[in-house]
Amino acid sequence: MLHELLTVATPAITGHMHALAGSVPNPSPVAPPGLSSKMNTLLGWWKWGALIAGVFGLVGCGAMMAIGRRNRSTLAADGATGIPWVLAGLTLIALSSGIVGVFT
Image (cartoon, rainbow, N blue to C red; front, side):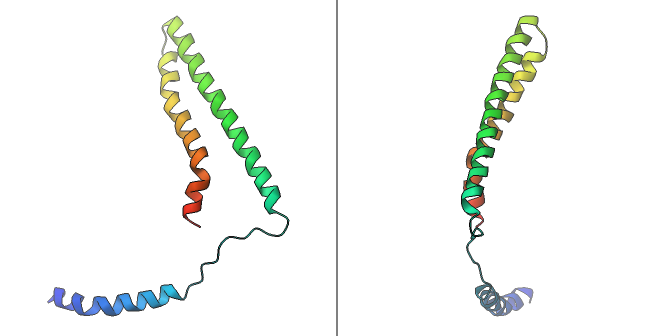
């Protein structure tokens, strides 16, 4: 009985859903006048700073591994476990505009 009820009600429900979804406006993002070039510059500076931080992170991980190996401490393991986190951060930085572009 439930199956019969669903087969009758589903087309009516989905028909109304399409009508509601079709009437919702979806404008593309537009920058305020004169702000686009300034925001591009600001985003470029942030991305440059984040990439420099990534380089420092990888250099720091390498230094921790070298120093920890020399002294036979857990510092080497801490440096090695930091590398995937730095690479994940750099990957997120590189893909950030593409990820956000999916939702616009």
